[in-house]
Image (spheres, rainbow, N blue to C red):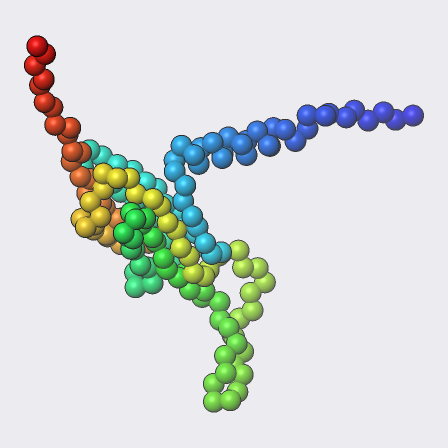
Length: 155
């Protein structure tokens, strides 16, 4: 007779890692991503600025839009166009692509990423630079309003 050893805790390690990832998301703040292609975006800061650095390989500058809503949400929207040739109709005739892909692993399509900005951001002071598929968006921080101190004399 063959005995199989059953581990009742098998699978809990993977579940534990997933729970830790959820906890990390709470610490970092939530972002929303839509579409088959979702660019990776780093968020960093220094004393005076907040920076968003997005990897957008193969995305043209004119295919990317950045917007900030009145409720301080920053949106990164765009399209990563597929280089794969599609069938098209020209003068009533179906044109077949020159090459057929056996395997296509890269993701393409429209994307949207959004992040909630902190309160100390000046949404009117924004700049962006796009270089070699890297988009860097810089937002200025606002000097926090210091509470007014009033001395009260006690009788």
